[in-house]
Image (cartoon, rainbow, N blue to C red; front, side):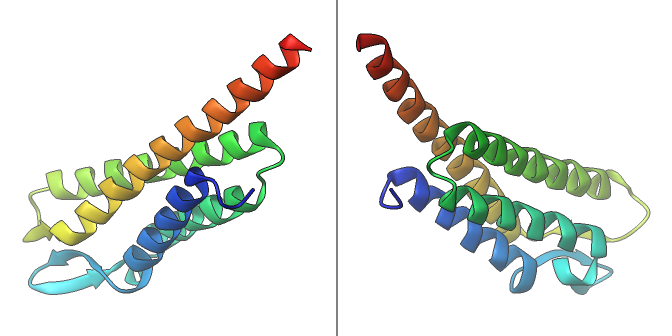
Length: 133
């Protein structure tokens, strides 16, 4: 059932994280734009979140595993946010965050939460139908 709304949310997360990985500058350091692919840790985290959401789209028959993958993607985006917060908190450099990257990350986070709620709702519906039988 790839036509479910949570699959659309997960596709949006995949696109947003791919944009963060390759196209959108994450921060400006000493007036030089830095992309996620320039920083190995950031690149690995963004690719991991994208892969978790892509795999979660196609594991629609195993809802428990799908929910675990979505939770892992949420955790990866939270780690990205903490890492950016720690970098922003250091006053050693002339460091500014790119707001379009921040908007994409927050949009991806909210889409993952909505996808998780959709999968949870489907799981609850199936469980309630099993109780009736």
